[in-house]
Length: 226
Image: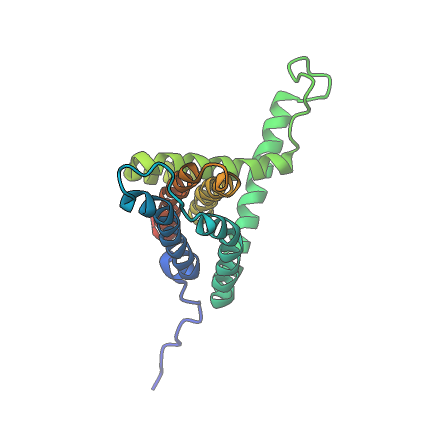
């Protein structure tokens, strides 16, 4: 009797499993942002109408701003440790697409004959092929994240368009979009931290402003297009 050998190819996780710790950390941060804002708005809401000065608590605004980057970095490391096969695949795909973007940039340079004496170049040096390849990925992530806020279906179409040539992979574009939205959220929290003492209401508003960015990052980390 003969048997068919089973496939040894690893079963790769869905994105919401691959990034489960990151998604959980983002969810925690969203709740902490709301709680921090509540500690500012709550006392104001219960204060008597004729009370002019209201003492509020801004420590949570400062705490969430300080802890968020470390929490997210730890979550990413934990996700990588849980899915080593996925990390290997992603690294390989990233190298292939990076090489493809470099090759495309080199071919473009050969066509236009870019030189240092090019009068259209201006005083600022143009990016190298390698830095340009990295910038292309960041730019794609920014573009997808911005589009996803307004129209997720259009953003999916944009991802397919960006990855059609093979210079970008679907997962790396989505991951770059996650990074872009997370950075926006962290910047809002950093500003909340610096304004907490002087303007508690502004700090609370910034904590709330960070939450939609973090929620968008959850959506982008969870979605599977293919």
